[in-house]
Length: 416
Ligand SMILES: Cc1cc2nc3c(=O)[nH]c(=O)nc-3n(C[C@H](O)[C@H](O)[C@H](O)COP(=O)(O)OP(=O)(O)OC[C@H]3O[C@@H](n4cnc5c(N)ncnc54)[C@H](O)[C@@H]3O)c2cc1C
View: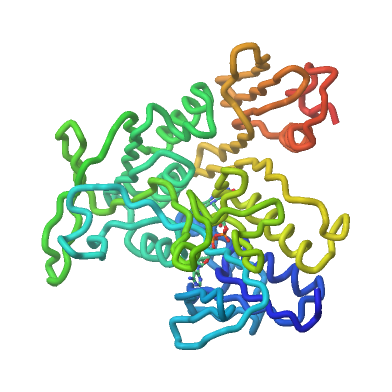
């Protein structure tokens, strides 16, 4: 890459900042990151710890690229013919290479009463859980005894419910699926997680669809105030706070308006190029080989790969294609007296016919370990409460190495 090449990165989150840092160390001269959020760069993965009161926001800081990051500036249009990006502050930046790292937006479920007719503001007391602003607003609203309903029992909903319970809220978690974190966990692991959250005081309703909100006019006037939720069976729950944790959707608006190929996410090839070879996409907004990851590990790996391609650095000199990420999901659910519950899941935790399954469960110690083996390869696993083998298992899974002896997979040293 020539040293005067102008690289513009849209999005100052995990992927965008990592890419900018790698480009800077790889010799790219002029990198500008546009980040619409006004805050110092932070790690979104740790928001639940801030909400739980365990960390101050500063603890979640990501390395700040200094003046290269234009904080509080949103890119509003990409003009591919001129190779320019127009920003909401009126500035226009030229680029030779553009990297889209716009992340994702929370999914807002189709709840009756979520918006006023023609309105776009959430009612007072209703919060998404995606940004530092969401987290600080929720944090300011929660106090002991407050009644909170969390809608969604995936990774986000479980994290939010645990954090609110740690702050003394009375939490009800409404999960439409038949169990918690159904995408990552099998039924047994889910049941253990259920028990753990219940012990923290979270009331969990599975196969429970929230269909609407009940609201009132706030005492101080203006807008509407949430007072509860209405379930599909007609039952009503009172609530002072409602958290929408119904998943995320890649932020593809800019790419779509610029005429790039977009499906679930912005479609990229094995060099993370979009349908315009001068524009790359990484992180939650990108779709590679039909897959949108929505996970931190993939965002970082894609950022590293793009930086290596653009600077010709890395091993071997930025020439290896990006072939996808084997992303491990990890979560630590810390609580008061009950001790933390560590959780890790990877690959396909639900076996297909013919797969071998090795499982160790200890109800007293609240540990559960399971791996799924297909032929001589490890294809997935779930670990709860006891993660000493996770590094060795993840290595074996990532490398796709042939296994000769399965018996060591779940023992404490993972056979390493
Ligand atoms: C509460 C929470 C917990 C999570 N926990 C885990 C976990 O345990 N493990 C895990 O692997 N993943 C977790 N994730 C997901 C992980 O945070 C994301 O996969 C990761 O942040 C993706 O990085 P990204 O840079 O692609 O997107 P983001 O981090 O979302 O960053 C995108 C940035 O781009 C900005 N942006 C968007 N459009 C524009 C524009 N037009 N102009 C300027 N800026 C723009 C956005 O404001 C945002 O700051 C969690 C997410 C949340 C919200």
